[in-house]
Image (cartoon, rainbow, N blue to C red; front, side, top):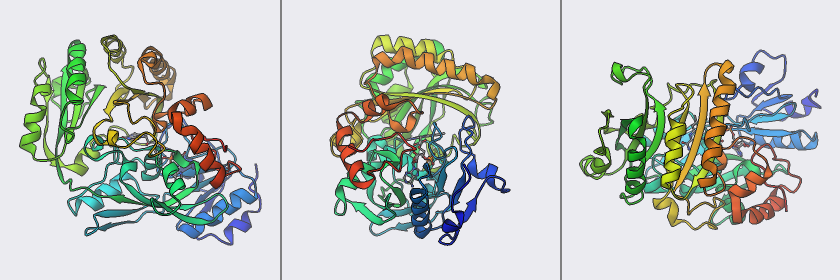
Length: 457
Ligand SMILES: Cc1cc2nc3c(=O)[nH]c(=O)nc-3n(C[C@H](O)[C@H](O)[C@H](O)COP(=O)(O)OP(=O)(O)OC[C@H]3O[C@@H](n4cnc5c(N)ncnc54)[C@H](O)[C@@H]3O)c2cc1C
């Protein structure tokens, strides 16, 4: 589709407007997942809220399919679309820490590394994910599961307010006090309700953490997973550790004899005094015979960026996910079977604990419904070479199909690809009807529909 009335947008816009044929087009349309290859008609790289308002008006008045791009990390490529308009926020950086109020104000184009860097200088952090290159916006709006979940809650549990441009081009602030229905929906409901232009989060005193991996040989998987299941849900909330199947990368930080070995392991990130964390994790780190136990005190931003080099932008990614209440012996046996079959070095399965502080919030208190689930499971087939796409996809689907009957039913929306309405509804569960009502109020024409879509009631 040829972009309509583009001058209408240019006359109100300060950032760059990029179209097919422009030198910047191919790099501007690229997202993190190399499997996604979409060709928008217009990419509006906003530099301020006024630009976002102009872009929303332009998209609406010209009836364009409109995607919102934060960090561009979405597995299904929901930050970009074919033929339509991309409202690209990646230039809207800017972070301000208020050390007295212990809050941080973050532009919607920031990635988590920007936030970690700024907050760390003040000895603080806010809960995010497990990698520093993910967008603040998309991760937050889906919920936000990360290293600090057990101790500090989901990212949305620390969101104090958000500035939003609505589908009609108007600007509002959403918080517990203002537009509380919108604020409820933004906390887990994804990019359905408007373009968030900035976020304010609560900060926690987190500077150094006791972190790193413990790895075991795959022959010990069932023993380790059973011990982990019993250990982590009873561990103090400052103890965070997710279970993983992975291939040890050939990086100098790992002993050469372990390079490219498939293992199971726990990636720790514990807050509080290091000696107490060392003691609290010892029983789990002493199960069987770990082949590597490299846990120690490190600055929090170091842990957050440990995976950055391993997972640069542009790899091929295929995602499947579920929430999990219980890890039965049968499910563990299936994990052992499929985990041992990791198809490529980058492919992995992670089980993130989402109990502790995340369970203190009721399932109707925010849009994120699975407050009773104990883990978020994500299976990702990943490889640099598109020739391996069938292999990574098939492994991922087979693993998911085997474990899905043992899951809680729905999945964390940020770990899903485009999987259909039934799956979206299963993931919002009882909150779906209320979300649809809020959607009707703020976006009755479903203008924002390039997302895990909630249809207006
Ligand atoms: C390598 C990797 C690691 C990850 N690790 C974690 C993790 O540890 N924890 C976790 O919770 N998730 C994690 N995720 C998933 C991540 O949360 C989602 O991919 C999320 O969608 C990324 O947000 P983004 O802003 O980068 O994405 P984008 O692709 O830019 O956007 C994704 C979605 O968010 C919406 N959106 C983006 N910005 C805005 C905005 N300003 N206003 C309204 N809607 C907006 C878009 O409509 C789109 O639907 C990871 C993803 C990757 C690829």
